Length: 97
Length: 97
Length: 97
Length: 97
Image (cartoon, rainbow over all chains, first blue to last red; front, side, top):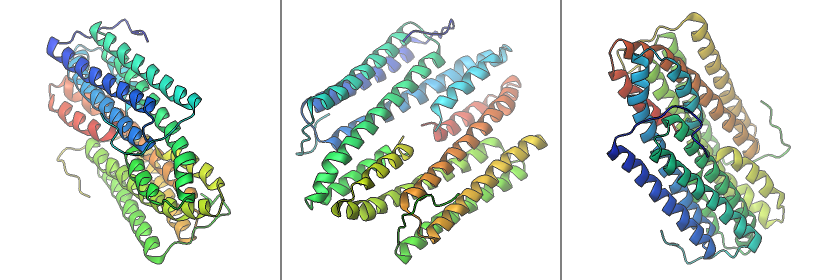
C-alpha cells in the first residue's frame, strides 16, 4: 500500500493524532476479533464485533472527507485548481452507498 | 471486547486459518493507513485505502455468515433449537444495508 | 420484471397488506422527488428525500428477509430441502453491506 | 414531502429529463414489486428486485451529488458563500456508507 499520488496533505498535529488514535482503536478491534476466532467464539458474537469495525471505519472516512472538503477542496477551488473536483467525485463513488 | 455469549463455534483448522489470514491482512491495511497519515499522504489516497478496508471486512462478514448459516443455523433448526433464528435476524440487521 | 422462479410464497393477508403499504408509500416518495425536480428544488433537499427512500427500501428488505427466514427457510430445512440455503446466501450477498 | 429550503437549482432541460427518467424507471420497479407480492412471488425473487431498486437510487444519488458539486458547490465557493460546505457535509453523512 503506497501513497499513489504526488500530492501531500499537511495536517495539524491534533488532527493527525485524532486520526491515528481512531486507527489504533480499529487495529485493536481487529486483533480482538482474531482472538475471538482463536477461542472458538460463536459466529454472531464475532459478527457483532466486525460490524462495529465497519462502523468505526465509516466514522473515520466521514471525518477525513470532512476535513478534506473544508481544507483541500475549498482552497483548490478558490485557487482555480478545479481538477480537485474530479478526484473528489471519484472518491465519493467509493464511499457512497 | 469480550465474547459475550456462552455459545462456542468449533471451526475446522483450515477455515479458522482462512478467517485469521483475512484479519491479519486487514490489520496490515490499517497499519498502512497509519503510516500514510504519518507521511502526510493526500486525503483521497488515504480514503481509497480505507474504502478497501471496508470492502475487506464486508467480505469477511459474508464468509462468516455463510459458514454460520450452513453450519450452526441448519444444525440448530434440525435439532428444534429455533432460537438460533432470532439471533441470526438480529445479526443480519447489523450487516444488511 | 418477471417472477423468475417457479416457487411461490403464500403470505397471510395482513402481511401482504403491510408489505404493499410500505411499497405504496415508497412509490409516493419517488413521485414526490419527481415533483421536486420539476419545481427546481435545491439538490441537497432532493438528496435528503432520496436517502429516505433508500432507508425505506432497506426497512422493507429487512422485514421481508425476516419473514422469509422464519417461514420458508425454517420449513424447508426441517423438510430436508437444504437447497433453500444456497438461495438465501446468494440473496444475502445482494443485501449485505 | 416539501421542498424544505428556500434555495432553488435551475437545471438544464436535458439533465432534468435524465433525472426524471431515472425516477420513472424506479417508480415502475416499485410497482413491479407490488405486483409480485400480489401474485405470491417467492421472497428471494422479490428481494432481488428490491436490491435492484436500491442500486438504482444509489446511482441517482451519485449523479445528483456530482452535478451539485460541479455546479452549485463550485459556484458558491468561488463566490465566497462557504456555507454551502456545511450543507454538503451534512448531506454526505446521509449518503455515505
